[in-house]
Image 1: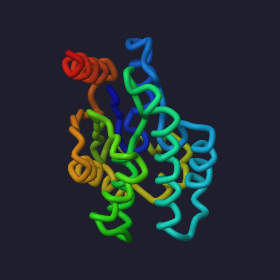
Image 2: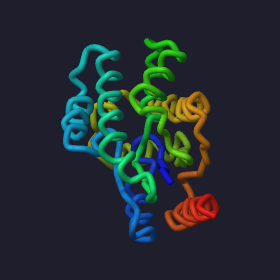
Image 3: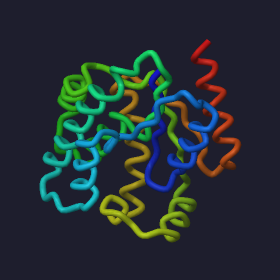
Length: 194
């Protein structure tokens, strides 16, 4: 089973993935972008924020996604795979930029992934107030520097992206306790495995 943890920066994805790794000891833990050696280089380019073209950024994400599916997802399809982000995030960012038609977004992602998407994705959803607080506690990367409004728009676009790609999305209140969030995710994964 292929599962993705989605959410904007500071939503708590890394914390939850670390906890899920403890619980599901045999799970394959990965991330997108950057889950492969090539992907790590692509991630660096995107996060430094130096690209002038939003299309170039989108195409780099697609290249990473294709490599990720080939190297990580396909060889481990009989195992539990937990990914920090997925195609959902890539489509959400592209939707916000508005430079690519939605039909093309889906077609290009289908091409890059061979139609392989998470069976379930979890969105850790932040309130504007909580996002503001969390951003104030850290040094911002290139994407975070685009501002709170941008990040909140991405959060809403994640819902639209999951729908476009036909991926089941479970929305979890990211202001709940770490333990409550972990418990909700584990319970849903266990139920899906039955």
